[in-house]
Length: 218
Length: 218
Image 1 (cartoon, rainbow over the protein chains, first blue to last red):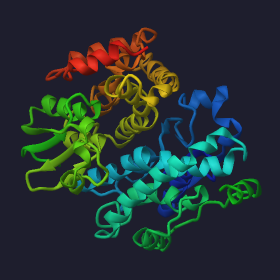
Image 2 (cartoon, rainbow over the protein chains, first blue to last red):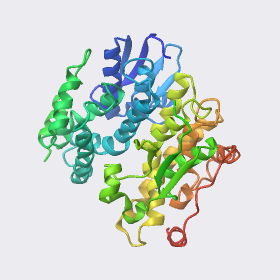
Image 3 (cartoon, helix red, strand yellow):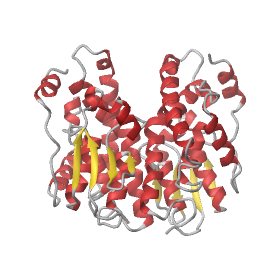
């Protein structure tokens, strides 16, 4: 069981993986300190940061005793343990985990990467050649979600929780990467249900530079 | 808590993701039925299979009441729940989950995909152009593991468990993809410790066709 001691999160606010952790902390009303870490400007590859996470990624969570946890979805499970956001039943918990592994393997590498390329790489970046393939794979993931939501209200068993938080983060901003949510009425209704949960906070909007790039991305 | 009722696993035996589940079932001495599913020959994209897992991937676990679980690492957590293979402490469990998300995001997409391309695509496949990049990223993941193992015996807290099983599967066969383990003495020692655990079973070897392709891959 985790305690209610304050935690520190090293995160980049426009990153969905980082926003997941902030969103759950806000739902829980748990005190936290946020250290803004510009992963888009190399801040996750300094010697100090690599000492914290040798894998060079945000978010990183640090407990008040200095113990470190990496991987956003592992943080969600730890923070939610013993709360309504993580099912107590082992089978329901496994289903939530299944969606969280789906998110990291079959969703984020396409939906989040398309958004990153659109918003954070130069307009002449050779990585932009990947966008059509990334968008196609993104639609594959969204179709799997749409199908689930045609018969279920949530991804975390009977109620809103960790798997919904994990999937909300990048699904909600998929259009930044040129991935329209228009074909997915069940997903759009679910995004609205997530927004109506107690303690919900929006991710920060794109800054002017990222917004300009997104607008100019075909 | 899961019960000891038999489960059915739809899996492709040379797949590391599938072998993970078989390995834990053998450790647990839990009865299971294995349905060989040739994902390399399209068996995961038939209408029947997609009805089981709309994401079109093995392994798929089916309980004797018909309930379905996807995602290999979620299966490991469910099967291990309440056993020595999953830590009872929430922080230790979160650390194990962190390594399992690392495996699916920062390890498998490089180590497993390099192996798949080497063993299961034609020698003139255009995908082979990806091998240098995949190998470079594989070495990045292995370096993170090596660093952890320089001060820890296992990835699942104080003892062998789910995160070790998840990481063992593709690390052990990384050389099939042209990713040498020679630079990683701590990883090689850990592979040996995994092999010495009670109930350990080897993954099936490559068939003649895959072995021939691997041998002819530069």
